[in-house]
Image 1 (cartoon, rainbow over the protein chains, first blue to last red):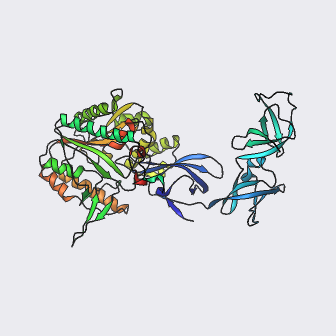
Image 2: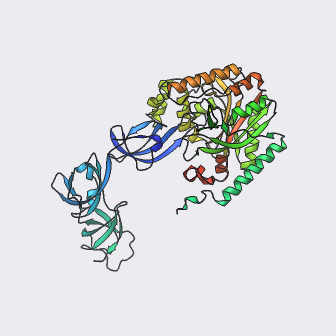
Length: 189
Length: 323
């Protein structure tokens, strides 16, 4: 894998740090007029999701991480692994619990998502920003209540639980923002 | 066609820059400090291992010498001082290779001036006066010595290198990498701890004149005659942004040459490009530099602060990205 010097650092660059693949979020060049130049870098550990700050001496090099994002279709779960496929090539990948994390609660079979691969094995799964799922369980709301204030919990077909307005009923399809986990609207079929 | 041809700074910034330059020239005219010009393209450059330069080839056979874009006008201005110019100032471009970021552009504008017969405290007064005039009288002026400020923010003694204590502090502040990065290099540790733990905590709306730098960071300053652990050097910060650096100027040619030699040796150890000592500058010191204090201020950053901008590119017509 290539190595990168600090002056090639920019947002999105994937590097190895403490043996983990990481993504650079922000890179700041810091230099006293009469002193050593540093790069103060905000980095996300792609395995744990944690964001840390790390300083490098300007000009130092680090190893790149072989990390790529691929659009894939979620196929099924076999009880232990979750299986995904690249639609164009039919190439399949299996991801474990660590890799799918919380994301899986937004995905139903056939849905598209992004798999992040490190050395060709799944590191994480990112759902689309918006998904449309039907409600399998929620308290019957009060008729005529369109206020949306307050709301109630609703369980979706994938098992995710979101807060929805009182007027939304079992069997209805709703649109959810996966980044915030919030209800957006009802979807007319 | 892209929009890259357009200036980054808006018209207001261009006008403010023109106003700033006019105000500076008026300030020095009133004080009878002479405006001078020295070459941007020079036969020699500084030896500081932390300054990377741009070089070019002069088509002048048979030597076709390498010429350097100046990293600062210091050496040339000191040659004028040694020739009896009296107090002088210059507004010019300086070039530092590899320096680009929110606070850096590899080509930037310097205001540099020298006051013959001024002590360092006198020059600090003048810097404060100039900045208050340019930035507005509402700013507070604080003077403090490096050691005291460093201790206030870190609990460490900047003059006594205690690696375990430095390491422990860096770890406690969330910088476990500091030890591997700085190793046994006292000056490097100070750069690290100062920029991470001190500079970031400097108060807003304050001109901070920080004086008596540790001797390991003396650069081209004289050491303090009563306490050689510190140098007669100051830096000025506004809102935590480093704006300028001043010295009670080293005039001892032998000491200057020894510092050059040390830096050249350091460059070799770090496999940095070789540079030769500036002979003409050393000759000028040998012929006698009058006692003087000098300071250089980054004008683009000054404009940034005056205009409340977050990045140097916002006050440059054409920053390096679309120069």
